[in-house]
Length: 114
Length: 114
Image (tube, rainbow over all chains, first blue to last red; front, side, top):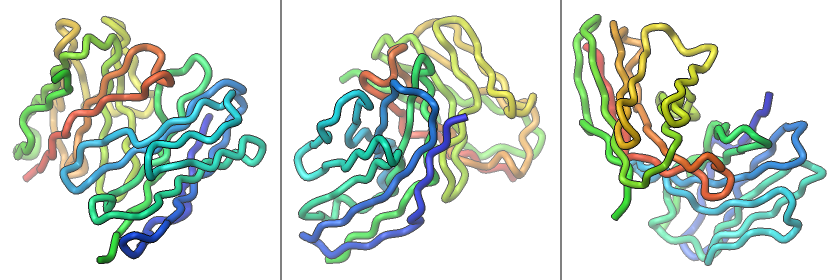
């Protein structure tokens, strides 16, 4: 079974600084997708960024980028120029092969300090 | 805007009294999911519908049931809620190829059992 591990229960960053959230996963699939979701205090999950495993190029979305290391099964999220609105719980998630279900990590609570 | 709507936002129910949570979508996605999320934990998949086909997770208690009368609506029924069922319940939808776009989540229903 696929597993997703987020080893940092909590992280904090100063406003305008950069922070990296870690995620590792375990799978035997060769074709899969990885996601980072943001869950603000209002609790609606929002997709931040996604990565196709067959693409070597790291995905970027404005201030958000990933470092995808397929051999190491690592998928970290970098948030540049952190803003107060970035404060949220961040979940790493995996969807693999023909299985369209998402498996989530336990999340990292990000605090942004003014 | 196309979206996933969950009602009610907050639900209080008595121990043992059946309760129903609802989810509707305007995205015309063929897959709908119910997740249970307890405090500081990853969302846990309870079951999903692929069109009209119901798929239960192996560890989902029998106390939890679901109905999908049409493409737009899906219901979560808890037959006899216990204190341990207090949680946030998240509804999500996807096209079958979840890796293409991931999930779209509703805002969740926070269930309190008294």
